[in-house]
Image (cartoon, rainbow, N blue to C red; front, side, top):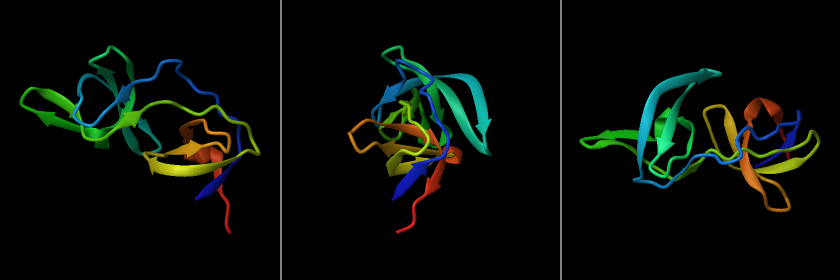
Length: 115
């Protein structure tokens, strides 16, 4: 599915958290409600921190683990650009620009292209 960027977006973090399924992570207890979706502030075993969707965390006997691969990389983009949707969750869309860069853009900054 393709989207047109309706409002510029600038990536918030230079070194975002990146997880692989099964990675241990530490939850700080900080959380945010983004348009009705719960995001948790997490720290990876490698020390990177960032927001992760609550749906990718599972509690185990030894702590918390990521249930899927995830990166908090955001995609800097400009209004008018066309991006391709790779996945969507919690009010954000993971997109790819035609020249290759990928990352998250808020859904509210995108409009579906029909056809």
